[in-house]
Amino acid sequence: MKRGSWATVAVLLVATTIPHGVAVAQTGFNGVITFLNERSSGKQDTFVQYTKGRKVRFDGFGSSKGSMIVDNDAKVMMMVDPEKKQYITMTEDDAKQMQALMGPMMKQQSKKADPGKFSFAKTGKTETVAGVPCEDYKGEYVDDDGEKSEGEACVAVGVGFALDALTFNNPMIQQGGAGYDRMQQFRALVAGNKGILKAKSYKDGKLKTDMEAVKIDKTSPADAVFAPPAGYKEIRMADMMMQAHKAMGEHGMGQEKADSK
Image 1 (cartoon, helix red, strand yellow):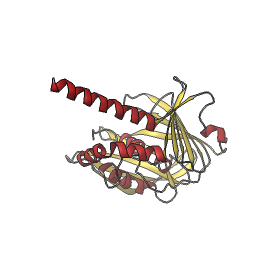
Image 2 (cartoon, helix red, strand yellow):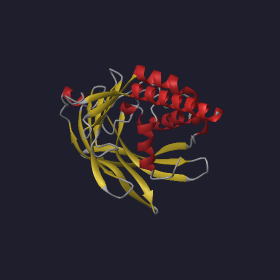
Image 3 (tube, rainbow, N blue to C red):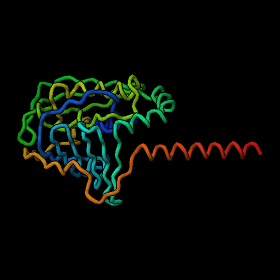
Image 4 (cartoon, helix red, strand yellow):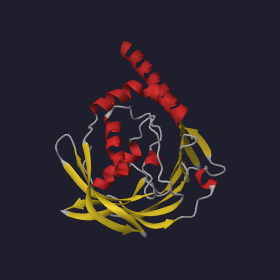
């Protein structure tokens, strides 16, 4: 894993390591939270989180224009692309099909992946972020080369970045693999109905804020917020994977024929 800010490592970890078959807990917060986010380029922008029950939507998270919707009741994840007027869906059944297609390759990658180590400890400090009190934790990540990244997170009860809501079934992570282990280490930080309101990392020996809640609206979002826009084309992730798998097979057969000549 490449070194970077502790908060960046954490956010990327959340977005990409979603273990299969893990129960999802929620902060219980229904409303809208606006976060200020500093990218690796130094540019500041915002992303917005909508939560209602076991549903969550992010606008601008990882992309300045797209949205991510996770419905943990229906077990469906959607990636909405307004530029192409389409959305990609992945259901639990889709995930199982992808896992069957890619199982051997994923197991091999999992064995090669760097598990690293996360550790967290209370600092004894508290803050108030967007009007909500939170408790500071210091986090440390050490990769297999012994290189260390450090930072802090301010954690609140019942509100914050919906870490666990993102833990939708993902066939790219095998239980017991390196990604699964990293995710389990990080999940401990938000156990017990908690969320992250601020994440900071050390740069040149000083703490800088990477992500911070700047506005919390306790108005419950409408159900339509968690549905794909009308008129958008649906693309299933499983269909994309099957097409890619078929193309790889045809390419392999073509190469065998060429080699035999």
